[in-house]
Image (cartoon, rainbow, N blue to C red; front, side, top):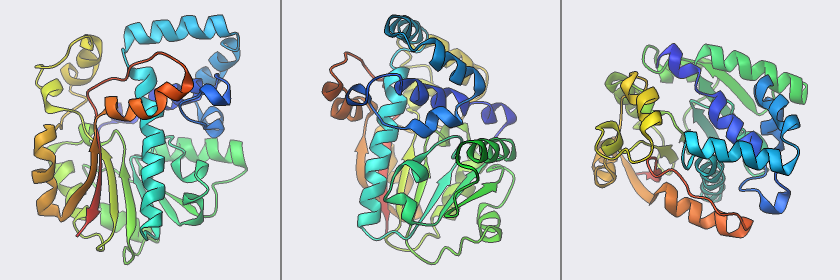
Length: 289
């Protein structure tokens, strides 16, 4: 995973932070901590955009630049939280969030806050999150361990073991917006690690559709394609029909596999807002055999 990939954590965090500008009943996700962890420029903008007409004007511009992005990130995070809490109900005893960035999953969910959690990311991202958590909460919460690692270069199992993760109980693994940044070697080593998970473990991961990476299904996302695929930032993708076959050798079976449009349809109507979600990144929920 490149240094350039490490710089992509602020964008999704910003979208979730901006979502908090809406009243609670109109939000796609409630995540006040996201505002505190967001980059300084995002925190400044949330103050500027406190006026609804300014907020709506900025979001109109966001939609022009990245159609569907404003709904994609908060809807996906809410969906992942619900499935993560389902995983706890099915007996997982720990959480490993791979490529966690500024994600707040193990902090905002009361259910997950009862479990030991390891958040893994590149060293620069881990250090930034440590500083922001300390600023927001006084310290990194006791149930969370931040683990710096390069997925393409370092042994994930070894780094987690050094950080105290025993790997002997069913675990929830999360890879949100991670797989597309990995090289073939990074994908293989990461899923080889996941293949060693105890039976009953759960996995939540997103992937970019191969049709987008191939340039066959870009639609109105030409700018996104240019800054991610053309610049060599995104490497890995899957076809929706290929996911089960991809997971099978690693010992995982699909529990749920939903498109971003299906996920958005769960949450957008209740907000009373008219939005659409970017269509290129489904979410997979799987169980270890």
